[in-house]
Amino acid sequence: MRFACAGATAAFAAAALSSGALGAEVKLKAASFLPPASIVAKQFTRFVEETNKRCSGRVAISVVGPEAVPSLEQWNALKSGVVDMHFGPPNYFRGAAPAGDVISVARNETAEQRKNGAWAMLNDYYNQKMNAWYLTHLIGGVRFYLYASKPSKGDRFDGMRLRSVPIYDAFFKSLGAIPLRMAPPEVYTALERGAVDGYGWPLWGIQDFGWDKYTKFRNGPGFISAAVAIIVNLDKWKAMESDQRDCLSKSAEWVEGVWPQWRAEEDARQEAAQKKSGVQYVDHGPGFAKQAEDAYWADLEKGDAEFVKRIRPLLDSK
View 1 (cartoon, rainbow, N blue to C red):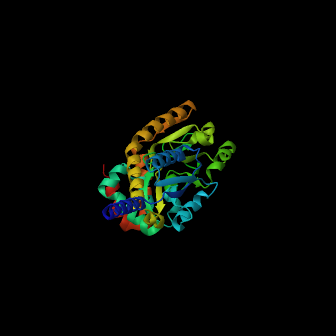
View 2: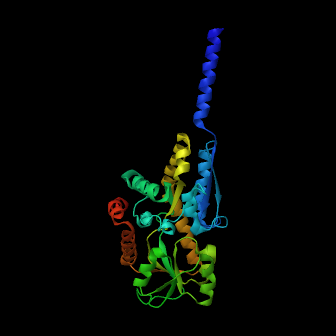
View 3: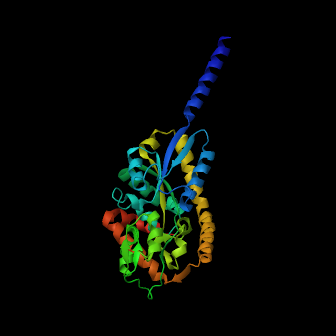
């Protein structure tokens, strides 16, 4: 009897230890910089839904959009722990992480960056600068274009007023254009009234805002990349159980593997939709994209030359 009781006690202790090792389900509040209906945010939703399935009982992610936390404030909310996860472009938080947007000028896939050491370098950088764990990124390889309501003069856009963001300000200026600042919801009215002659935007999503109604030309080749980081508050990451962190990491590796197929399928849909809307593609040759990317690399170097010099070869390699 004594031996039987001892065995039962040991079994119970082992079961309790095993249960405790798994830990309770951790709930992560994620902030997305775009509303869930946008084509870009839908990719994050796909990742979250799959992660919640894979990590069921261990991790549960819920998502709020810019209506809950304004887009430009989300990175700071992540850094301070107000939200646990953030889906947002690193150019939004360049003040805190000056070279964090190198992923936007990468020429290889995210999975390759994980293999060759670039991911580890970026993770260390985000740890230090953003109090964040760099999980992965989406929208990599979805290039920006210069959309316009009127034709260029050769490769020049002299005097054209273009809605812009810092990531391609220098490029637009080099083409003779005048970069202007405005939030995406304001662009439709600006196009309608002729207050702007065009805008910079990725291949995806001009139909989301109705801009295709006033857009006649898509000037390329596509330049830079619309890469959007998925980062987790570092304190939250460290507080999670190892199996919870492992599940999130494996989910990141999974999405990196399927991402090229997701991108190719959506690229085809977006190109077909633009063609149907009457948007004409204008190819300005490979120098067009190179000019944009060289300008942005130079801009990133101003923020952290040493880091950019070390990581650039890893992001250029195939």
